[in-house]
Image (cartoon, rainbow, N blue to C red):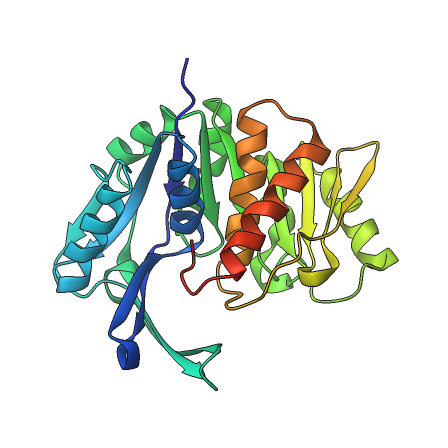
Length: 266
């Protein structure tokens, strides 16, 4: 049976007013676009507004072959991240306009729809974290991006780890003993795999018995936005196809390398 995946929770439009460009985004959306382009059936479950960006986001995601039947439209502004370019290269986040994401709450029908998927992806800001235990009980594999917040007490991630199958996190430090011990500690809460990405230092992954390490695929860096999401997508594609950990990490690095070498986030 074909494995369907769902990107659930947060979505927004990255808006570059100076360039007259925008991209439908959010960690799960970026992940979903990559997987859809790899031939995986993808749904997006979230909300957009009644403004032009809402309609354009639906058109763009539908154009990628993504199921948007549960990308809800509500009265108001689509969540937007206003962006700028510094020195013509570096991305700068200017302001977040939360819009209709501010009051987003999953309906029971939307929960049931997601429960019909093999796997879901979410993050700390999608406002669906209270549903993770029930999705896990329903047999949905959970991929979650904790970004740089996995050790931040504010987010109480230790309460979430038991309901996540594949934990991904970003680590700004060196490939030191601390991060190696931290991924091992997270694994004790119950995830199958815990993976930390470290930019140009590559990534590590702990499966409970082996600490895997992988470097990067060299690229001429144009844009680092979406690097982590694309790595997770490449890694996830491997999981869906039953690859071993090393092959998943290699694929994540390859997809990420292709993304950072161009302007677009996917």
